[in-house]
Length: 468
Image 1 (cartoon, rainbow, N blue to C red):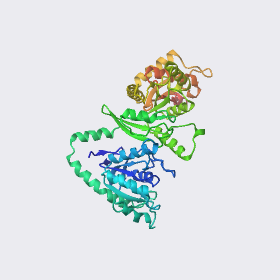
Image 2: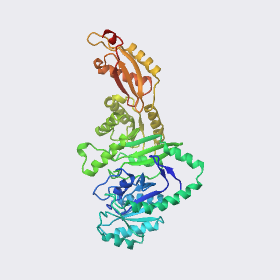
Image 3: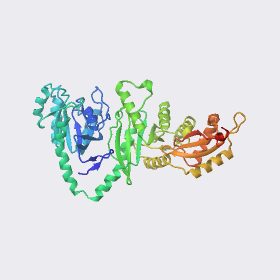
Image 4: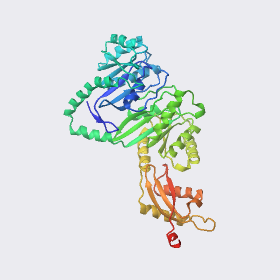
């Protein structure tokens, strides 16, 4: 068993998978153990479709917890059957399984059917009777003994009741993990340090059914998230660790984002809101287009929001094997990006087919390149030489008969590159001249395709105090 550190720095030594039929409160329990609202919770059964992982802490224990789709007895070819397969994959990766039932509803034939599947997995099982609020006696707890999974633990994930008993039941796995760590070597410690320092957080966004989940699976080389012809399969934003040449990349698959007027029920609104939150925490955002449709208005909305948030942006034209006139399709997208997003002129566009794998090798170098530019720092001396050259080539216009002077420039921060320029009269500087400087700055220091922010400051007059 390989122990590791969680993103929060806590020591993680075992993994817990939460399973059960739909709508028994698995995602609510997942959020409770994780200590924050990560998974989408809704009254609609089957909200969770892909399994997701997060660091958890309870009663002094630190472990990884996995939320899974509700187990359903369906054929392999349909969506519910593929969801079940994803849950079984999560069980195979877990140290211990929390089998959750609804204690208020009582035991159902579906509970009995899937309890048998969990037993056959050979994993240790902790039986949990959820929705046991207060001191009410629930018939479901008594019935649960017939599952043959041991004594059921009563708890209420929504209200946080009964977690002490759950911590006690899980503590045995912490002890076993601690004992197994005695044999870990230094090489394992080095791997832990590497995991502690993520290199790139890449979020995949786009409209529904453009191939975001297929692309993620292609990149990591396994069927990690659900795919299929149905639009809107992905609901929760799913984080997946991907290691390439010793570099850790956190890939986030998000729900497809439609125009606000077309967003339907409350569940879809929650999924879109979750996708937007993922964008806020990302470093590089990969906007996936359908090459046969080109650049839609909603694609531009997503791109503008990404730039406004200061994230590095990269465009992937997926399904590149379908357009008949590829050159025309590429030109249409490039021209519209140039017109509609001048603030990130030179935005990189990669043509790929996630289904066949064509062009996938070009994607990672493009991500690394735009991430490096997004992190770039320019020396102050070089920055001020640029400012002198730019103003000599194109002096700022006079305002009210007085010349505007640009005195000094410095970089305040990276991620995105942000610069401060001291000016004698910043309020009188025309926006056209500001755009000229931003464009020239990008060209000079190879910052094309990333957001560049310029903050204007009024320089102090050195003679003001003498006059006063």
